[in-house]
Image (cartoon, rainbow, N blue to C red):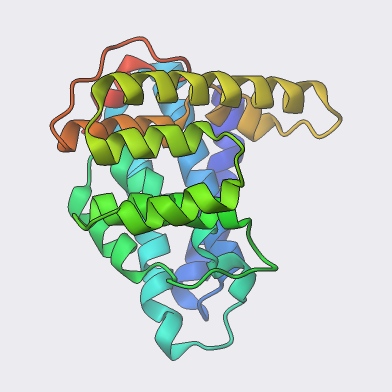
Length: 239
């Protein structure tokens, strides 16, 4: 793991100064945010370093917020990487326990579905989460999410609907199913020829989105039991 962290640190040392000095770049920002997330997960897994985990998630969320703040004055930014469903750093802010940072991000995320650039299901999932983070009524976003499923099922829909209703039992069921689905997907990726050592030795064992959902549930006053797959308890102690 130390060698992996050295590799990630080297990549970050190359990318972060470029982001800070140059013209805003949406693709590079998301790449750097992913590396920061992976570095934080690596610290948590190898050293139980909850402060380092939180610090790197906060950095990932912060550079994404800066990107969103630059959008109005930089129309040349690649819209593909600005699609709402690319906004995983929102999960970083929530998982780090930074609700105000999450709210700033949520308030600036694109309001319009980019039809050829993101799945509609993912767009509405984020839309429902944004409503909850911003303390708005999520019923419209949930209805749109359900319509686009066309009778199909989605563990993310079940989970976020339970969050909106403050349905503790429904949230627990939905999140456990979502974690199991995510674990199965990561295992399929690991067995494929598309093996990414940075991801599969770090994020593969820490479901940051799941950590974020648990944090959001707790902010909403819901009880959340321990023992979710891919959500180590130290990750929830990092705020």
